[in-house]
Image (cartoon, rainbow, N blue to C red; front, top):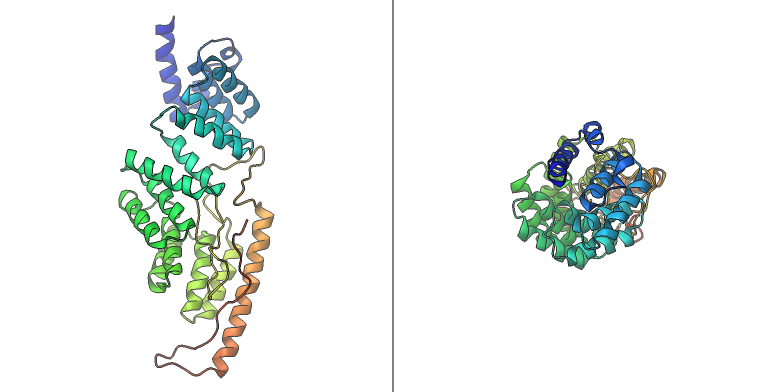
Amino acid sequence: MAKQRKPRLNEVEELIACGSLIEASRLLPSDRTAELETPRVLILASRLLSLRGRFVEARDHVDCALRLDEFNVDALTERARLALRFGDDQSADGWFERAYRQGAAGDDWMVDWIDLLLLLGKLDAARDLAMVRCERAPDQAAPWFRLGLAHQHTRHQLQALNDYRHAARIEPNFPMLCNNMGAAHLELKQFAKAKALLEQALRDDPDNALAWNNLATVLLKFDASPDSLIAAERVGRSRRTTRPCCRPIHTCCGGIRSGMLHWPLHCARRRSRSSPAMSSSIGRCDAATDARRLRERLVQLRGAQARLTRAARRAPQSDGGAVVGTIARGEDVARLG
């Protein structure tokens, strides 16, 4: 019986991986799996239930699997992901840590854990874990991107750029890569490089509000305040702030200071969390809050444009013809969200 079941379970895993939910559910009916005393069956059933939005039942199946084998890594990581679905980030962190203590090599779940650590503000732990993952999977772009993100969170821009370049060599079109690299160059006051990368990000994704916002800041640095205002207005008209598969960290790295007004960091490849409502200690914002903050930034940039216009009328010109003046000042903000 066990020998007959194992090939079927392998087939169920393959069907889940390729998105064939209906076929997988036919092979593994959820109303019968609770009677089976096999952790693997219960875990597969839990994944199927999660894909159908039946998170409470999915959690019950995983809990049953953990009662049978409390050290089962697949069950522990599945339980962590379900905790994320329920908005319990602290518990999810604990479940991931338990899986890691079992000496598991890690796969996608480790990348999910790095994302969670970044969202929780555990930057050193996120960096250390990303380095471990990069060593174990040096040919994957996602760990290198997250290592760069951890460095960028701590404002180690050169290290972040090095990590991002490594990710780009593996997967040049990795989501949000150009935006984050552009933001790093913006922090380093390398405005020409920042502008080129942000323009590339917008060619790849014209609705990328983070890139539009960063580009507005760069254009202010080039004394192109009318163009900057256009970019800022485009932020408010963007259909979304990120790709649907991403979960953002809206971070300002010191906020509006020294003429800088940008969202430099974005954590890609986070699952969209629709039910129940998901949140974290970083990036606690819904669509209404995002829209309000975008409007506030637009007002700030319009104020910057007005100040630039007044400065242009009374300030002397430099040899290169650039206006000497003050750009976009305001209160320091540690984080948005």
